[in-house]
Image 1: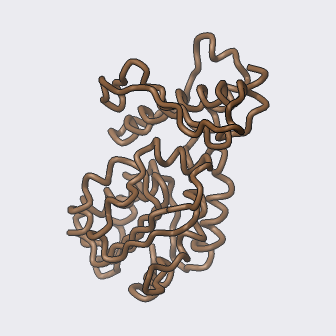
Image 2: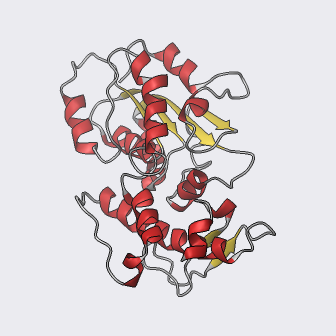
Length: 270
């Protein structure tokens, strides 16, 4: 455990897919374990120890996200067993479980602050919701005047939430922007497109994947290239999953950015 504490978060890109005897969530009974990112830098006991903890915890987080999608909203998480005695493992669990990337945890302050600085504070009338607040979002939309355009922006798990709401909501969505979305909503992309006048999807495509936010997004079911050819605008941005501002302002081959498209298609954004 002491060696694991010396390794950095993300273990310089060393990742464990811990399906040594298959897995129930996700349902891959014949799945196998994988070590990814082994090289001279990561071939250290501390890196392997911490990557094991992160891999197992990210796997548990997948189950937690799935429960949330089904309407279960846990108010507390308790760790039991021998692993709970480890201070570093408790910290890893707190970093990964508490809110997830974008609404809490190790990257929360930077992502949420980025959102507030680059969008919410510069667009009058914009309202911020956490990604777990689907019901509250729908209640808010229900109160809008029937002639007011509805525009949704979501990042990470919030992008998945925005997409699912767009697919199911009773009114047509004016503009939907999904910024490197993560979750199972990707299986509803045709329904999403069908209820949106304009859909912009931004897919993070960094030059190097050795960043914890990219790893977590991949484990959490990043949509990746699924919206390509379906969304009205599909943008591949050379930035990490956590970089909301850069993703919003990254141009496609024609020079269009998500921020520019929003400004063009709507005057009041929600």
